[in-house]
Image (cartoon, rainbow, N blue to C red; front, side, top):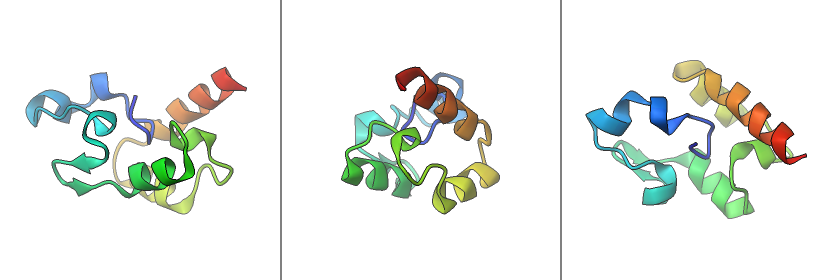
Length: 82
């Protein structure tokens, strides 16, 4: 699972772009630096769902553009920890 809640196993870019996932490349993705990865890492969170601001504006914008299920995935992860 990516920091932003994308299921990397289901992501088309895992195979199409040989993407190892944000954890493996520390947010330096094939398309550029991931703001969500940088933010969560800076705050010491394993994923965005652990943030007090969850879901923040940036996460909502990413989800609206692509992979809207990421927020639900993070809610599930958040609930599993609490």
